[in-house]
Structures are given as structure tokens and as C-alpha cells.
Length: 294
Image (cartoon, rainbow, N blue to C red):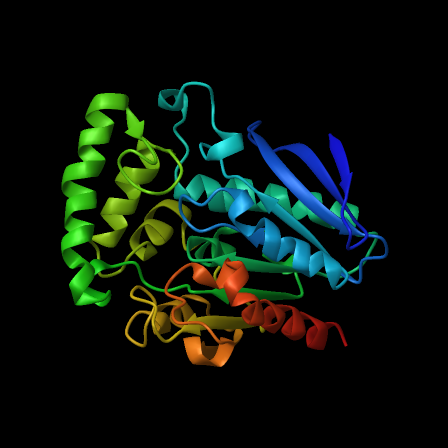
């Protein structure tokens, strides 16, 4: 474990945590001196935890202890030989995310905690058997991954990725190799194959949630959930976003649509909300967390 002090008076802690099944995950915790609350930040598919580091540091500057982590098979949580990793999305949601949330809670000395998930990082809340430990859940660009609901101009890219580049990488290397075969981090073959299966299904991951997990933990019992969606996102749009609300049964759920003009940028898309040029967005989820605290 290493500690680095930032100008915002938060300590950066590099930690290793162990899941209930014995997997070791790489974690970074940005801990302010007297945290008012904690936020578990769960990544989108193929994004290493460092993608969210500046956003997490901003949260720490506002008094929130922010924890970012790599799922099994991703970046600093990847094995030496990626072919040895058999983790998939369900592993990330049922094992990795709960372990990360427990690690955050253990650091908070009774202060409230929240989750914030980008893309799949918001879909996995319902896979976590301990999500009730969080007072609220912020979702950023979370929707149905079925290809037909995405921007039609991008369909050809999804076809090339799922049927040409991905299979070619698996044949050559035994895993999805980034950035050679796609722009994200390298991922286990099991993740790629499950991702393709889900994106070809109108029900996306819901069939696996029912068949393999017995419905998992999507009954939210009034939990606060807010979706932050972007009007120029080619993936999460008015056709695909309602799927998320339907999955989280019984949630106190609302959606906040944000245009690029509102935060003073030319485009946001699916992932640019976490870039420095989109800093005006960063305040929005933390403002919402503060209202839930009070």
C-alpha cells in the first residue's frame, strides 16, 4: 500500500483487496481528511480505473472518499497470462463490486456511502447482494446494450468488432487484446464472448440474470437512483435508457438528460463526461449525493 498526499488534502491509497472467491483486485482510494461520505466508482467495460481518477479526485476535494478499482482481468487486476482469467461480467457484478463496496464501507467509520457506475458499472448494481449498504446510486450513461437500439451509423463498427476484430484477437492471443484490436484495456475471452451474446439479444443481460442468478438483486425497495444521460450518446438514448429503469424494480428512479451545450462542450457521447473538459458535469452527481445526505 502506498499513500500520496494531493493538494486537495486527500490521501491517495493504493490497496489490494480480496474478493470472497479469493481473487485479488487493485484499488485506489482517495480519502479526504474528514470524509462526509464515500463513493464507489464502478467502471464501464474495458476502462481501467485511472480513467476515473481525476473525477474521483474532484469528489475527494468536496469531502467524498472515492474508491476506484479494476475488475478481474482488467489493467492492474489482470493476471500475468490473460488466458488464465475466466472472469466475466457476472463475476464483476456478483464478486468484484461487492468486495469493493465492503472495502469502502470499512474505511468510512459509519459515514454514508453511495455508488456511481458508468455504463456496465451502473448495470451491475442489481448484481450486488450488498447494494443496500449504499444510500443511493448514481448511473452515468447506462442503458440496454442491444445493437439495434444504438445509433444506426455505428452498427457497422459493432459488426466489425464483434464478428471480425474480436474473434481474430481471441484466435491469435486467447483474449481481447487492447489497444491492438479495440481501444480499451485488454479483457478476458469470457468477457468478450458474453458481451457479444448480450449485445445481440433484445433482452441484453436480463436472460442471464434470470437463468444464471435467479433474478439477482434488482428489487431496490425504494432505493434512490438517478440516471445521468447525455443527449448525444450513441448508445444510451430515449430508446435504450428506459430498459435500465425497468430492471431496477421499486427504485426511486429519475433521469437527468444533459446536453453538451449545458456543460459547455461540443460533445459528450458515451464516455467523455469523465474528461477534464466536461468538469461542469462532475458537480452534478456529487450535488445529488449531498442532497441525499441532508
